[in-house]
Amino acid sequence: MPASTLKLELLFWDRKQIVEDIAKCIGLNDLNIISMEVKNQNGRTLVYIETQSGSNSPENKDIMESLEAIPDLIRITRITAMPSEIRKKRLELVLDSIRDGIIAIEKDRSVTFINPVAKKMYGWDSPDFTGKKITELPLENLDLMDCLKGKSFYKIKRNVITRTGRFQFFSNCIPITDSTGEVTGAIEVMRDMRQIKELADEVTSPSRFTFSDIIGTSEPIMDAISFAQKIAKSASVVSIRGESGTGKELFARAIHTESRRPGKFVAVNCAALPESLLESELFGYEKGTFTGAEKKGKQGLFEIADKGTLFLDEIADMPPGAQAKILRVIQEKSVRRIGGAAEIPVDTRIITATSRLIEEMIKDNLFREDLYYRINVLPIHVPPLKGRIGDITPLTDHFLARIAKQVGSIRKKLTPDALEKLRHHTWPGNVRELKNVIERGSIMSDKDTIDSRAIIFGHEIEERIRELKSPFQATEGKGTLKEQVGRFEKELIESALKRYPSIRKCAVALKISHTAMINKMKKYQITR
Image (cartoon, rainbow, N blue to C red):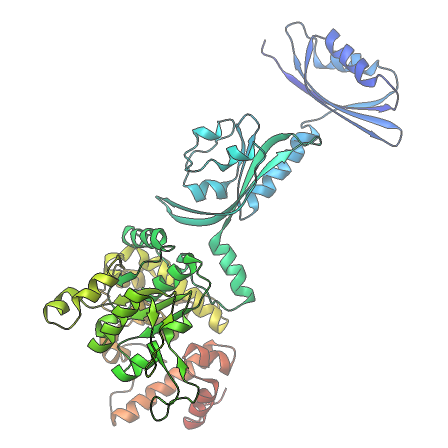
């Protein structure tokens, strides 16, 4: 006959030797005590006991009759779970429901608990690791082992890439001690960086960008992120290459944040400024250098970004004169203001970016070869969107959530046909184009969903806008271009006013100021 267990609750009037009497009775009935819990309260003693039957144990009713003979017993009751089991179950339910990953081990290194969040972070499929040694788990770090020696670790940054995606989190490892101070186990608590960022964004406007802001789990983008993280703390020049709209500046900002440099992140578009103005912006000038100059002179961006990062976007479009001066700054680590003689030392990390093929420009003598080798120390290639089609879904989810937050509305969803249309597009404008398409679709659709008709690419706006049903159905094309555009603009504003709760929300959705919205309503005689 297999061994059986019996769980009982016994209530006694308080006196000495109660536990001894119970143990004696248990022994006479050929039972083993698995666990016992004793609690004293208000002159009474409450005893919980779990026993296991032996080969000569009597029936349960006979065991209970034997226990009833113990003096000062008030009552005896069968129970289904010990108080410790109930507490453990409650604790597990709490730990399973929180958003942090948790791993706990005993002194012998055996795992006592892992919640689902921790399994997801590490990409583990095993239903249960309980009882296994921590060394048997597929872990790259074993800080929990050091915790068993009494050490503690706080805010350790982890980056784990699994087949289900990339997880970045902060880890705290803490030893567990008993009342005497002896270490009895250890626990690791992991907080997802996205959650931390979301919490921070609720309090302050986002000013620091991290690699967690880069949306996507495809292999090309993960490789780029992994390499960028690896070289972030280096002081070497970084060259970010990629098509327009792929997110090169986002990479630059994330590298700056990861570098922990105390200075500012300063960005300048080299293609947007003429040569004379670009040089004065980059290197600054002394007072009285030229007409219209500030009286006290001006710091250049290299000085402003001292101990920080200077991002030179579209460096391939930089004029030859400025190229030579940039090369000198990289070599000498100092700048000389326009009109000045003094060398000003700067500790500025340089990150460059371009969407052009610099190697071909060197052959055509449009870019200095010596500067190319100076800036191409750590190249990062940001993949185009057409090379990471699998990231379209998380990117669209991100953009739709942000739009909903901006205008205070319910987040819209893409229909399957809309998503399929997005996946078959070539994306010449990359992520920037996708963002514009999603914003356009969100405005065009007056439903909670966005279907394929509302997914309109830049080259087909004029052609497709007439195909949309009311309120976006255009007129038959009669009248001048200005008149037709006016009619469409009026219909667009009227549709937005139906979808959003206020004029201000409509203005945000349409990317215009509140004043401009009021003026257009007056122009087209639109009322709420």
